[in-house]
Image 1 (tube, rainbow, N blue to C red):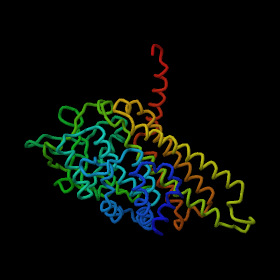
Image 2: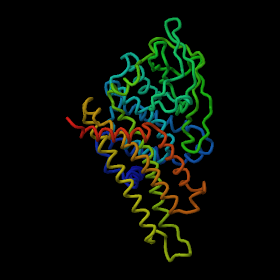
Image 3: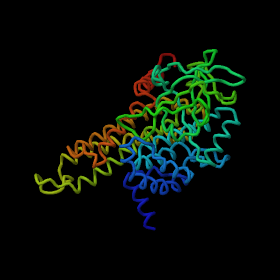
Image 4: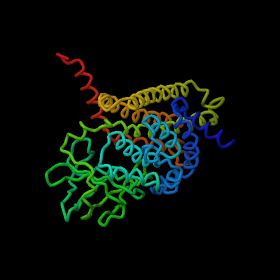
Length: 407
């Protein structure tokens, strides 16, 4: 009973109870809160050594969380977008790096499920592996030469036909969770200049994780380089092929599953908010009569934080709920607002953690407190897709087109 009270208390402290709406979310929220509380104890150490918290990943797999968005027909949780987002927020409040890593897996599974992408045998195999073994996957598309794939760069990684299959040659960057993934969804340029997506299994000869990740924030995501040195893959591993910009236009999920990105960073920001509120009631410098919580200037700053986070959450869950209810055409119409939800959410997380640092003052720079880690981690969200400038321009273009003459 005491544990369940603590877990309910965490969800209440984060202010997320109002978004725990469905039976699935109500079932999972206390379980995720329990894991988040346990993971929080090791998050700072993993941040320092820059290693993926493999124990956290194992706990998520054993709980069935890694199968959360797998279709029910394959034994998964069949979670929708709004449920995934709120559970990811709770998890991120305990360990943002672990939440971001597993979020890429959950969102990719949700996208495949929603769009019906990939040939059925490969789709079924990935779903089965996630349910049975907790097998994780991620899309590995970024390269130093091209930057973010959302900007339209063509992969320098090449797929060369060989013996009925392909040989993959290239180097990928930002391969989040690469040390613990079972499947890598790798983009490569085909001989006919289309872009192919290959589902590559861990352990394939020629696939090497080069541990290059040493960054300011999200240090424990293991976002190393993935080297493909003549990696031989069967023809069936080619699960999609397209000529840009066709993929963005035909995607059945409209980019909705990417809302796991702002959900993760907002979860980190909510942890900063919770810890700041506690700090304000316990910090009593001798220059004031009581705790700093009683200072009007502090109340003003926290009021700004509340407004910032409330706006971001309102948009996030409004759009996520709409995506869950919509058909494929309706989801396409939501594309611009989905992008805005990402931008507003990640920028709100940056602003909220900045406020926390300012209120705490010089003490916030100490690694003995979590604020500097929260501050560093949320800044990574500015560089996750969809990129802010692209999303804002798309929203502006959509607004203008709705008033175009002749419409």
